Length: 245
Image (cartoon, rainbow, N blue to C red; front, side, top):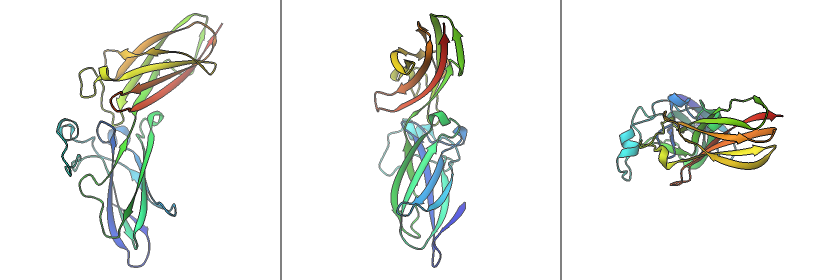
């Protein structure tokens, strides 16, 4: 338990639990480095508390497989969270923000929300203060950066690891079905978009691959994105390389 002091006289301890859940997946916890959580007074900007979510990604049956009912928490006691006690002497309009996952910073997003908090009125029931983090963790592995190639044309291999923000795996017919996501590389040469190439599941969990032909010398950027057409969830990563004559 972390104690922070936001006020002086007649302050009442007020417990707050913050959880961050990956869009269409599980909680962001220790396995992904957690999410950095900050609590501020939304009216003054005063920093009240900060820390990381820690714990497990949660119960897959409760989060994904079971039908959700009103008031039924998605979390269990071990589900990743950040807990804090603020000593409040008056109602505060508090902004909570989360940034992560910290173990994959190229994919990290930030999300925030505000709520009035009354001294002594805890925010811990159910899932506590729950934030939903959009995105995919996309990690371009091929081509490695920086890469210098000589001579044209060049066939360049494209490989990317794609996971949910909680680290959950993607594979055909899995809970997160590779066949339902669009994974594509946008190709830019000297800052101008020149084409795109689809990446296919590469036979190993969360791995997607393809190839692209570079016909002219220049500075190339490959932007790999993952997109879920069912809910608009999107994530990306990029790599740059050079092709000379």
